[in-house]
Image 1 (cartoon, rainbow, N blue to C red):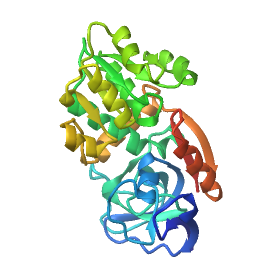
Image 2 (cartoon, one colour; image 1 turned 180 degrees about the vertical axis):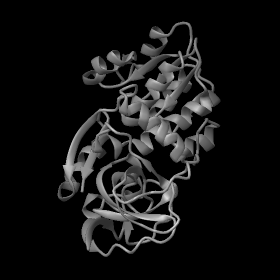
Image 3 (cartoon, helix red, strand yellow; image 1 turned 180 degrees about the horizontal axis):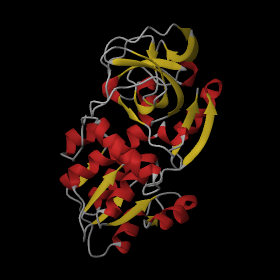
Length: 307
């Protein structure tokens, strides 16, 4: 038996409950993983609360990203490169059945080996932030000479995106609270405080023009971008899918998650070539506090639960 965080109806944090579950034996192509860390994402609370209009079957597990240790392996269970998944392997990836639990059976197609030197907390936080940022980068293809504005630049996706865009040679301007400005400057990002005068600030800081914007916040920022003359197709959002359809914005959509891409990004994090700060780590018993912090939306990096 192991514990798992689930909900049986959509709503606030109060619908979540820890329950005892039986972990099934892994079938061919899967492995039983004992989770060491699971990073939270805005998608987790938006689906739970009904903000995202997707069908949900109850009871519903919550969380996606994970890092852990392989405890049992089904037959013919290999990584993407064809090497066998073995007992004791340290892995990271995503678990669509819910990662806020002590252990779960995970398909081999959604996990990769954890690089040495990568902490459990960071490994368990990478999947969604890193793959989403990479998908947005692949869509818009920043290049030397580009000036890009990134909203919620101190959030997990924003931080990874900023670093990837800078490595591509672009100038990056990031919106964030004043408390995060020094951190962003240290990465090479030019910070600007969001607020009622954001449009004026952006016009002043980039008088030569803005190539495109990366939206990680929502309609409020999208409207600012439109107001300063950014063409809809030059606005890439990962947040407001309704606005994407209504206004003709760019969006990476339901991009294909790749364990090969995840492993390559995880290697860069393990070497310190990319960074992602951990805001706070909670135990599974303190899940309510973790979600309260996540839903405040004023974060630098990730909120992590260690089952």
